[in-house]
Length: 188
Image 1 (cartoon, rainbow, N blue to C red):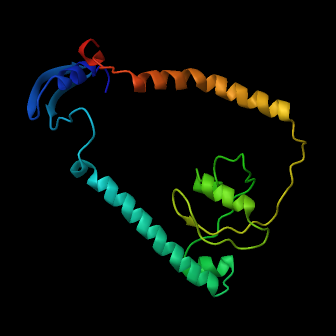
Image 2 (cartoon, rainbow, N blue to C red):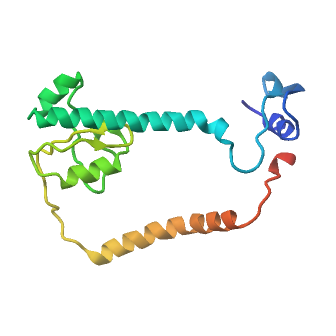
Image 3 (tube, helix red, strand yellow):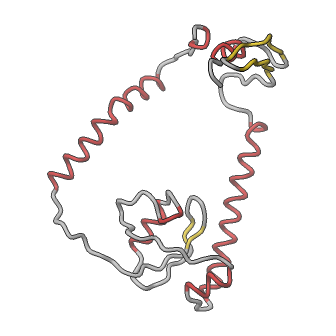
C-alpha cells in the first residue's frame, strides 16, 4: 500500500481493539484496527502452537512415508515400479554436484544432494528425508571433475566470499549483543 507509513506509526502507539481515523494513502483511504498487540520477548506457545503442530505433522508424515518406502524397496521394486505403486512420477535431476543449490525441480535440498552424490551409480538409495519431501534417488552416471584442484584459487574464492559477508556478520553481532530499542516508527 503506497504511503502507508503513517498507518504503521499510528498502530505502534495504540492498544488492542482501537480503531483509527481515516488515513489518506495515495489513491486509497484506510481505516485501520489494531486487533492484537504482541509484547516484546518470546511469543507464547499458544500463539505458535499451530506452526508447531504443522511441523510435527510434517515430521510424522515423513516417518510414515519412509517406512512405507522401505517396505516397498525390500520387495525389490525398481524406481519405476516404486513410482507406479505410489502413483507419482519419476523426475530427473541433471547436473547435480556438491556445488548445486537445488535438486532438479525439488528446489533447495542440500541433504538430498549430499546423499545423491555419495550414492553408488545405478543403485537405488534408501528413502531420504528432504526439506519438502521424501526422496529415493538412482544416480545414472558419475562424472569426475575435469579440472585439477587449485588450493590457492579455492582459498581466494573463500576469502572473497567471507569478505562480502563480514560486514553483515559484524553488524548482526553488534545488533544481537546491543540493547537497541527501535523507535523509527515514531519518526517516519
